[in-house]
Image (cartoon, rainbow, N blue to C red; front, side, top):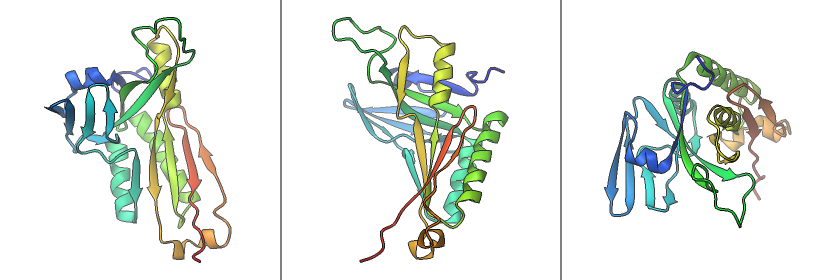
Length: 218
């Protein structure tokens, strides 16, 4: 199987997604706005509300691009979804060499938005995601932290397999897991051990782990 076969990853322009939603999705049109409903049992949507040229688009069951977790139960639930469901994320393709004199190509416009889906239950991708999450937990146990999961490299590979007339620069191609522990018990922070940045790079998912910081009260 190709590293980025349709089963593992798809990239769909927003308008096309709304006109023909994939299995497990339905679109409700209210005036110029759109509400997108999804099946939570199979899909994990991480898309914030956004404005398009056709109106406001809301993914009703989305957790948003930044997922907050406050305890082990919430973390376990999010982790299970990340390892078993198809993940949906909104990204933007920008023209690498924009021109003010030439007409932009049809298949790429500056700021064009796409819905990317990733099958995290695929054994290869699941292994990478699980490995990155495990390394995070072992590195920042007891601390508040956030994890940025970046798919730019995967999108660049997809672009190489699906050439466009100009090479895009992918923006907003990540989502964040944010774990907030009680600052009073964040001992690594108080003893000065939280000033660290961890980075685990994988073929599809470069995962960046950064500690959070608190100000001392008063």
